[in-house]
Figure 1 (spheres, rainbow over the protein chains, first blue to last red):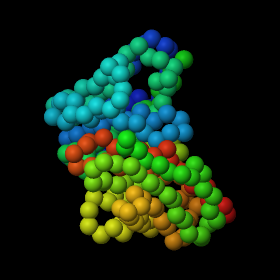
Figure 2 (cartoon, rainbow over the protein chains, first blue to last red):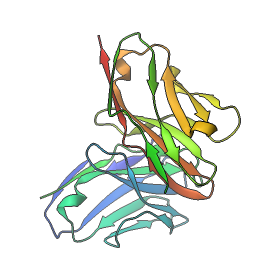
Figure 3 (cartoon, rainbow over the protein chains, first blue to last red):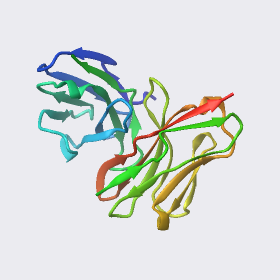
Figure 4 (cartoon, rainbow over the protein chains, first blue to last red):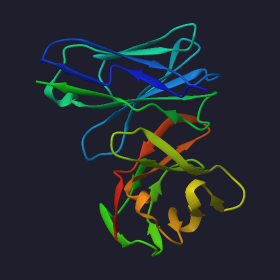
Length: 112
Length: 113
């Protein structure tokens, strides 16, 4: 049983560019949450997708957007990248809402 | 405001010694509480969770945590640590009416041989 997978593992972009990160949830899970983890900090909730809709959003600007596909996989898009967007981006899947969230290994984004 | 505080940034413990990691929270609703562990280069793994019921919860890898409502705490304990327990530990809080997990800043556990 594959767990949560994320791609790519690492990414380097320059300021102003756009990036798309991808997540495949654990088999049987229908909910995907995205988190940003800056170096030395705990994860910060970006948003959660359920039934292809954004169900809840954290305190992130509109530059951060997402999508969930009918197979429950998800994308995180960040436009107009800033240096401060450099972080580890974590995807977590669950069945329903706040049931146990299973995390992927993350995508490390570096913005130069 | 909702928040989670992990007062200890680093903790150093000798192998075989007992461990307690502290977590305090401020949350308006009845909390759901979680402890996760993150090893270098790896994702977050759930150690244990508390939703309701018995306030002493058992988790994986020999960890346990106790929910104390009066102290707004959910401290993580292990009677005897192993070198493989060296990692960063995160406490998180949520609720049944809020899908957002609020996280602490983490405690890095260092094991002395």
